[in-house]
Length: 313
Image (tube, rainbow, N blue to C red; front, side):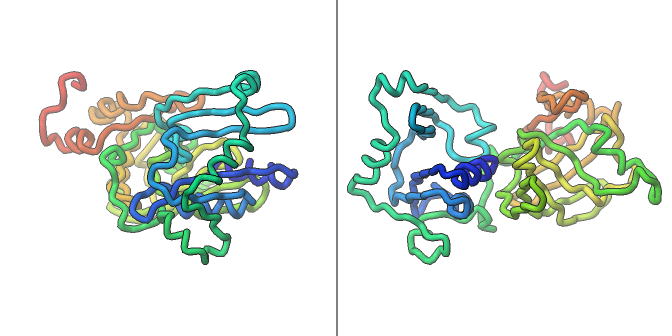
């Protein structure tokens, strides 16, 4: 998502953006949401009906005086661009010149292959849209690697309204948890675009079970695509409950594509101290941290179903 506005501005300034994606009716290779947003930005999209196109992904820039090329294992997805451990090789202009590499030549060579190649239309009437999968498909089953719990050490901005009394100035405003860029891949596709003002955001409504208060609510998760690239999670039902103070820990468990659970752990409690060990990545400079653990381990820890591994004791 962070790329779309960059592409849009580049095209509005007279530039050109070309994208080639593999498509399939039987595999989740490229999504309708990504292609739709690229087309709306003015990107020239080519869709190739081929399960095995190029395993190595290639990105780069061409201008009158330079050509750069990145060859990487990272897919054009949130995790692939920002979260996964990927290997990438950057070739600068001197390297591409020495190799005789040309983006125009590469694109032309690929489009001249004897492949089934399409250019999807903005109106989505072309049958080639069937080669793209829908990220909002309710039948999506989570991969084992996506069945995880996020643990985040909460700061003052996360909890001020939770600890405030109704009617006070501190109580005013919306209640959010501010999450890090590491939240890429933890939430489903954020497809609700908001361009009001000059800061672009993308959001999605998800089902959240607030376990501590026994409420299940639809809440909004938002990505600040044109600002600080952070995520924020709406936690309005916790406002004024006094259930979380600065230093408390929130455990957010993903149970399905759109269904989550949220639990709060106060400072100095045994479970908070145990789960806090998984919060290993700092967010900002105020001591706030975030991390992940498999749902299976989280469930064992909070349910005391089996002995906790010695290294976590």
